[in-house]
Length: 285
Image 1 (spheres, rainbow, N blue to C red):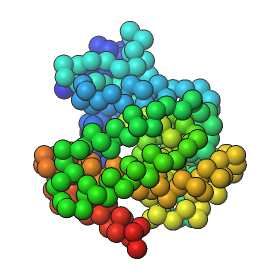
Image 2: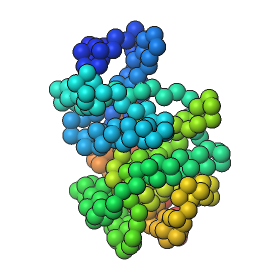
Image 3: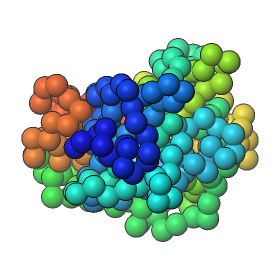
């Protein structure tokens, strides 16, 4: 992909510096800069159905005052441009210091997720349809003996829940997607996994990334959305299993197809799958 030419032709941006960014599991990205501006050009497969909704969500949240790395429309007014077999977007560059696993940072994650869900609250969808997030990996669930029974237990538990709240979700709120700004505000970027779904999924994901401990993430989240206290108390453990089921299916797919995007060694796929198995084993004790 000729990134320099693409930026000029589709966004009327002429960079004087281009830098390949690493670390994306399902995307490619470049940092482009000139005097007075810095943007990130991000490219995903043409079939990635979450890319444009994620950019629209980032723009909506940006309008509400959150820092999101919002998209910059092309000269044709589009958030996404089709380039051969790729979708391409240009996003505002967000600097700052990525959060880690400290208590203060876990609280910041929970608080900001609560604000995101408050702005993006939506009518509930069909939970069985939403669980395609897991069932799309069905043909890979027999890669190891434990995967299918663990995933089935997670699906059954989720389907038994009633009256759960939905919003537009970030989808993968790992600490490294949050950046503390010089003025103390916290930004949330990387909207490539955004989706319409149960808020419990985002909360459980944040708890998973905090080592499975809800001690700081959940109280901070409820500080923004106290009306969800009973719902989170009743459903968090179930959605932690849902989150691990997603990881199990995803890494089973990557292992079966030797998908190496975003990693340096195939062993990282095996570790992702093993981590999911360990989490189920611990939860069942």
